[in-house]
Image (cartoon, rainbow, N blue to C red; front, side, top):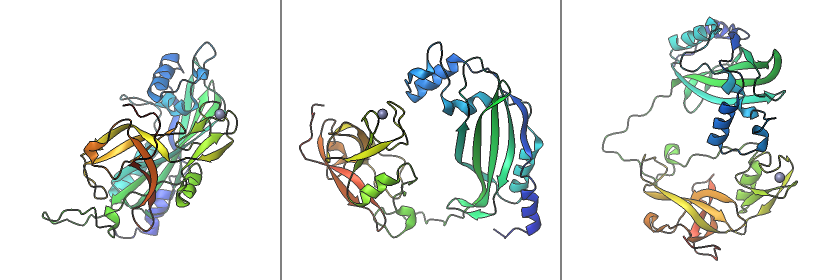
Length: 320
Ligand code: ZN
């Protein structure tokens, strides 16, 4: 894509601080049926979300502002104008990249929700793997009874898709072609909540988080304990023994880094937590529930090493 003129970028920047939604009103007050449906969908049985003193799960914040198919009143033109400006310059694709929420007070059944949203920032032009474009961050302030209850930041990338090289019809993607970045395994997303896990993998240790409050083990890594809410934790190293708790065989869709069909296992470690991983060293159709497996670390390319499981070991439980 041609480099945009400074005037174009100034036009985009001029949308920073402009309203995206003015005086939006939640279609329903905070209510128990929606809370119950959410908790069922999430499998969240926290008692705080039920009973006479129930509060809504904080992560439901945006739910109370959603306009459904019929949309909202209060939507300003600024957001649509900004999109039109980006579309017009060829940044026609959109992807939601991330969201951040802050909670100031709990929401409880009966709370009437109002909200305002503004375009908080428009980034400079960025090139990502998807293509080149602009990140647009919107901040929504959610109020209950007029009092600020939480903030929801939502970031999208409006971009012009990267040109794909045309593949000849006869050319097949080769999973063995490790030098081609497109046929390499996807990289793990490493962040402050799971960095310790990947540091362990680099040392060939499979680390399980242990809550400092109630000592419950958890996996995958999370910032807090689902059992007691405690934010302090340490780790224990998995012995490496496990059993296949469940599995699926992937046939479709094909993806250059993988060679279907292959088995994806949900492995129950002897410590009791479960993890999703590959079951290697056995034909995909010979993987069975209850099969004892043993941890090993498999290198996929110069950067990527992953914990995988191979039949064998002392696996407890068995059955299946
Ligand atoms: Zn705990």
